[in-house]
Image 1 (cartoon, rainbow, N blue to C red):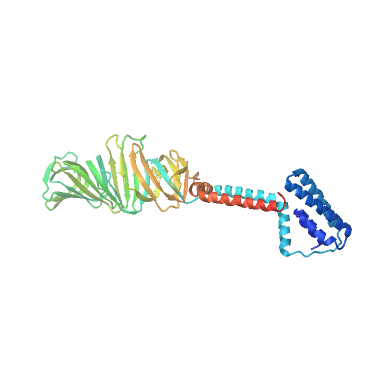
Image 2: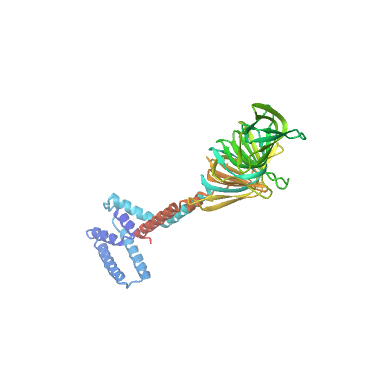
Length: 454
């Protein structure tokens, strides 16, 4: 490296003392005039440094002195013999180049570094996090889902009227019963020696049963059953009931009754009359049991499709389950006239939950808003209740993406941004990243200061 270039680089990075030392070494044997100038400047440098250490030198005076001294040394470098070289190690060359780079671009590097962090934060917030933990609290007049496991519900509630449709068998314990055929036939009393009668649908007919004043004490729903719950629109009718539709329909259930129960059915076989079988096109059956003890009626659904309609006491609701049910294929769609469909949602909310199960984000659902959940294995139905004109469902679980909107063409993704999700679920990652960024900035500032810029 040329000696003059080396001196200029030393001065550029504020290594004035090193530049004076090198100049003394190389000018003494070749140019006495330049050497005397270097010695004079070295003495001034030592004096100014001593004043600085004693606190007798202001910043302004210090800056003025070094500015003049560096200019003078640059003039001396210009007067050095052409072609005069000096050996400089590769490590020192790299160090000088690095310090020059930091002097010229260090502040811009810091600005670019923080601008990049800001851009990264904006990018992370613009990217949606999935999967996420959510809790749904929804009122709707129709809901459909598929059960993942076998489930047993135990409402334990009495109903003035119950309809069981598309069943395969019902067994009714009683000590005697009365059968009335048709709409106006006289009741005929029959004893039951076995204490049990069995009802089955006549093949090829749509059979259903209506029970009055029965208590539903148990309902077993097999895994992978598609269950649809429907309530009548409160504005369209005064009726108040809950319809449960099962596909496939091989459910099992138990009703209980005390003293007596009235059963209405059509197209039925009745067994229990001393080994004979009665065919009933339309009839009413009153079963009687000894007073004081409840009797349990068991039934089974049809293997393909069954339904159950529960009508509670006026003013009462229904809580059809207390245990958690794992479900998938959740849908809130209500068909209209068999040709179109609308959303069955009345109102609701979607809570996004942190790892501590705290809500940090909420999306509201208005009447007839559509909801679509994607990429999820299962949800837990934590509560299913019936109010007048609505079902109240509470569900929770991990889902991939959550969309909602006023129609299927305007569904908006509701997932939080990655940065928001990190803040509430992995704050240690954000604080760790900020800490490393601050340490990096301080280190960069230290090297810039060391290079002589700051």
